[in-house]
Length: 120
Image (cartoon, rainbow, N blue to C red; front, side, top):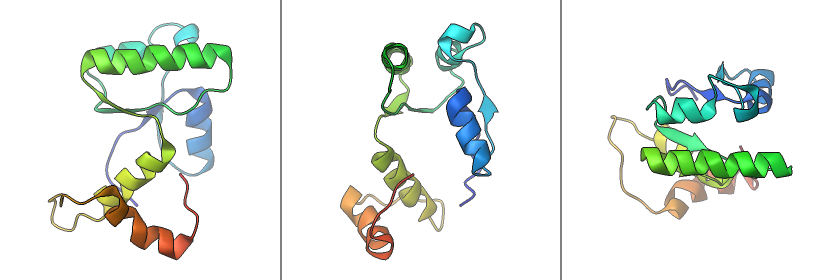
């Protein structure tokens, strides 16, 4: 689905997206120095942050700092890939540019029935 969004991603996510033919702009992790993800968020350069589960102590600390920066900048932050998937389904379902208010289950149920298992 092509939704005309610009994606920014730290190195690991950027590589994973590229491996799956999804275009993104690479942004430094915090430890990689400026310009990094916190600066991008703080500058108003993003409208939504997706920050999924971390596996190392450093990535847990960075994840906290990213979520905090998003909150301080007033930027929505999603931490569950299931929620991201549901959001994409909802956005993809817009036929006339209007968003219809429905429950999360109403967006996901038709797609889950077809796929049985869904993930992003």
